[in-house]
Image 1 (cartoon, one colour):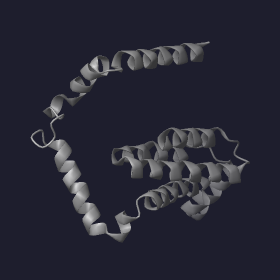
Image 2 (image 1 turned 180 degrees about the horizontal axis):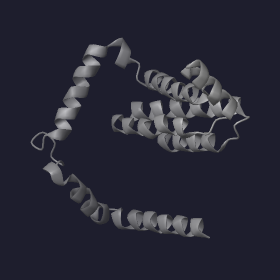
Image 3 (image 1 turned 90 degrees about the horizontal axis):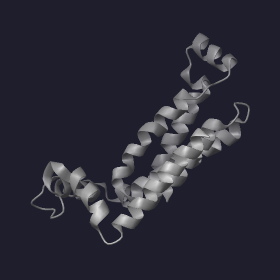
Image 4 (image 1 turned 90 degrees about the vertical axis):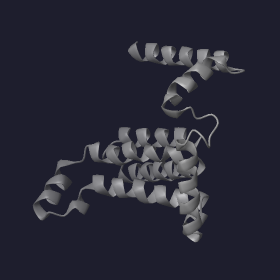
Length: 168
């Protein structure tokens, strides 16, 4: 849920006109907050921050501010770095709001996180982990589980329709 809406917000921010800076900043803050919330709900979505931290830097800016930033050697004058820091800070705030004990009890949090990493990386402690062939295991079960055939088929049909509509 959080992940989908965070992607929506950042893509919406990328499409905004340069002159609408407040709306762009608000959308970047929303996308960062939702991405941080997503990480708090499922830790392995932490990799969502990589594109979120790259996209603001790829954004076009108006020439006047960019030249001013280069002339004064002040990086902060370039709005892209403001957007980048907004995404990062909002992401941290979103994570802390949903997972406050990562700060309040940092020692136990780090220990529990280490235990989780060990648990999922060692086949003997996680019965569904079959070593380095996890991708094959999940691909196989995607079609053989209770609703696997129906849900996978609907997902593939949706993907094909989306790609087909995009071509037209």
